[in-house]
Image (cartoon, rainbow, N blue to C red):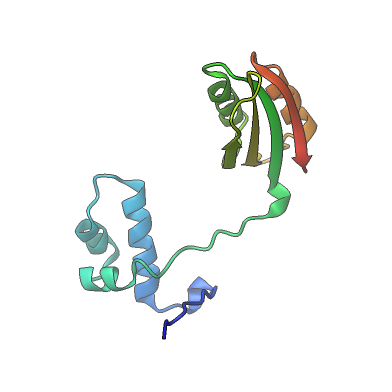
Length: 150
């Protein structure tokens, strides 16, 4: 009989200290390609055996507010560099790409759907969907850009 795993969300302040330290060690390793597991364990103050026991079972829960995610539908000319220019513009505008999907081009036009997370700096207003689409339409090779969900 196969044992099923269920996920639970637990506030960090009620977790055993070792679990919190494993999460911190994983964050340190993710932030540095050069940091070994042993070094990360030493920095946070846990044994390697504790790290390896829990590392594949504990994860940070990042609450994703759907109000900050915007889905875009794009029609792009099937030319080298067009999608790259779109991605660069999204980066410039402070957007984080959550998901991207490109259909096979038909009649030299590719349909692309992109979901982005909008992030405004402190005191700064995030672009709305129509402003973002206007910015993307200005890119050479972008035929159309529509906000699918605000």
